Figure: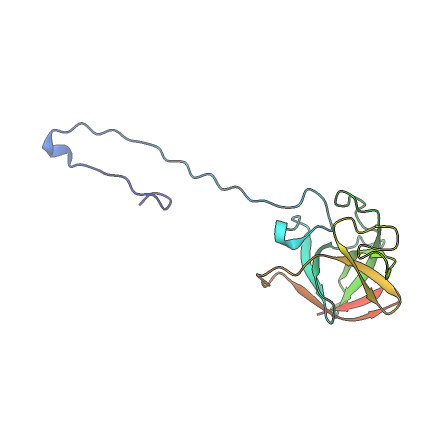
Length: 153
């Protein structure tokens, strides 16, 4: 077996000429082309999939810089504000797209979540996507939310 594929071989003593074939396995990893995307499409290398406890949906979240800044590239159609709003119990800080919840528009008062949903939590909102069917170890679960300060475990 060569990288998961089989190859037929013959004993050289049988007079059958050997031809060596080089097999190359191509692995294509898909991920979102921007930060804050849907974890179902894969997160960027500097992000983790995050789910807020009590809310439906999850999203990719990059770590905040030491100055509290967040990457500004967003999924197509999203205009929500990238904010350093998540905090782990160990002090790590992560970014989220903060939106304005609306009873009229599922994706935020002005559609700022693009194809995502603006989930209301304590008067503010966070853009999320339908929760992936494969909730894996890379997910962080947010258990509390304060004025732009979410605790992540």
